[in-house]
Image 1: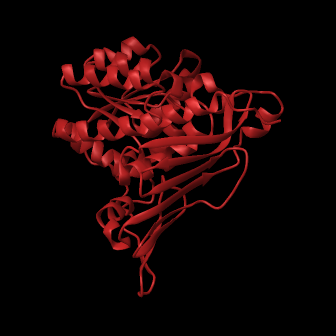
Image 2 (image 1 turned 90 degrees about the horizontal axis):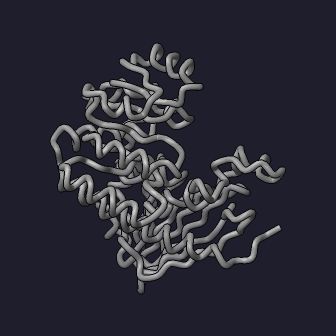
Length: 327
């Protein structure tokens, strides 16, 4: 996989030191805006990136690149992914994939027509501990309740309170608690249960954006609750309760460092199948394989899952519109 990194923000800086642990991944290029060229060149020197681009079209026309990783602000995901597919590149796009269901349908059609891989980068779905949960969900019997919490006081919330709206809190740029943190909890639940029958989202809305909220997914005989917050802290864990036992994940649903479970009448046990200390390595190992093997069947399964997640997101975002804003 000859990868072009599109973007140079926090997530890129977080990931680049671990690229050497991913067999088959070559850092072919990095793209950023012209004012950031000096920073891009520092990254190039530090991590052995072959080329620096400050023109997106020029980057996408680079024949040495076969795949792009879209790691730009949420509101640009659709535009950049579409351009990359039109340029004949495979696309790995950061979460949240896109902001509208129609955008995902358009990208999927384009990827299928051009026989390209298009996939959402969402760590939750590729972690070994999460795969264990999916494979052993029957330990708890009939699942009755799932709770997944991700609350983290944002480093940008103080500025928001003072009137400065940065992208993380800008609804026009896909900001807010649901899209930033709640998306992981949604992936956690939907990856286990699929598309829900009904979605409700009760949020604390300030200046048009949800700073925290509670999402309820109705599956008939099973109810899932996702709590997300950028305006307050709280314990972070996920819990699955069934008629015959429970499973608990300590820590955020995008990391899942350990899993505990107990079946009725038995003793609590712990599982930790973590393959690498950094959460993004396992997903990129999977992406490299999917692209190398041109596994379009896996692409389609992953896109089906992303579509189910976006269905939930769209319903939840629509639910915030008429709510009374908090002070």
